[in-house]
Length: 242
Image (cartoon, rainbow, N blue to C red; front, side, top):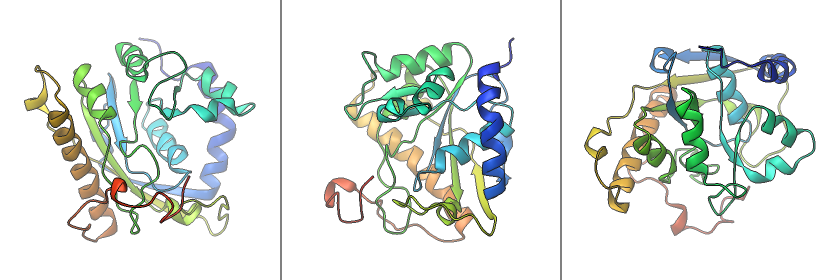
């Protein structure tokens, strides 16, 4: 099977990796949970704009290629948009659709070739004041269930020291340590093979968010709030905006 790490991906990764490596070091736990071959859906927590770079680097170091469902607006940025298209990232509009295509179909096309997809189930930076995962959306679960894929939770802690939430100012010195922990595939067997009702999708998404939160609790050595932050119950400007 051809390597996922195509020439385009290697050429684009070459200048990025030394920069991010100068900013931070990764301490990765339980990396064996990320499949070394075959398709998967990876679901990280999200609280800094630099999160995708860090998670992408971690996945790359483990021998896989990071492909994200990414905000469509990024594809309009000169140079960056061209680069994202070259490495087949998936643009998603705020409405939840790609430019003329369904993002779930685009994700299916990638996974049909044995590749992984990284989906932030929260959809945006968490609004939780303590940086805990907030209520998730069902896209990641739907991709996993409709394509019979494992959904792998992962949590990280430390990117806020490099780039705080809603900030544009990167901290260059000293070099930061970012802790990453992969978890086993979330057991969604009882949701497979049947109709995906909204209730089933919400329940399955809750299980995924529980798994991510547990990993983050392990990294932080703290206990998350008993009730997960629900952005629908709070003002969008209460804790800032993207």
